[in-house]
Image: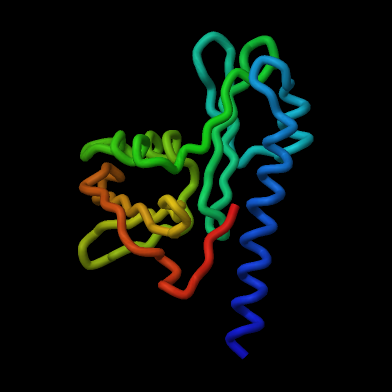
Length: 166
């Protein structure tokens, strides 16, 4: 019974990645409009205000996927940036003392949030793809004041037999 479930998860993961890639191939920095971005990627999870009237659209692919995207729309309504944000460079920017909103602004919505009531902490985990093709987890531990205590890369949070996608 485990094989059909694994096959379904594998199929879902691969289709998520394929759908994103097809959509991303249609978007061009400086050319694509806000309407184009919404047409190909859908409504954003969240819209972050930027200076000068620009906005950044947050597109999360968690918990099934291993990528999150931030798409910046300039004040003129054209796409100025498209970034897959679950990267080692962005993980390194997460520092003790950062607040939870700043972390979400950097990485997008996590795959899961697990409270540890006795410690008065919560751990946010993002799934990401470590080259060449290994799903890992990036964990951020927040204290009671919703500020980062620590962060670390770990194994696939869904277990060693799980398959990541999108």
